[in-house]
Length: 70
Image (cartoon, rainbow, N blue to C red; front, side, top):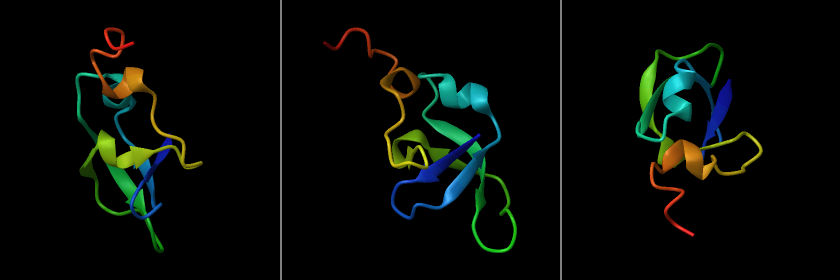
């Protein structure tokens, strides 16, 4: 699965999708795809990520208390 870094738009391949879906985890491990080949895996803050279309990640992936806020 790919997400995009909001500030640059560069694609990041998510290496741990469970962490992406878990609202209690604020960072994910991924590999940026920029240039000729994929870069070494790094940790990225979920708040700095979006879908490649520019749409924000769902609140249920980023906020553990999303149901309490209405």
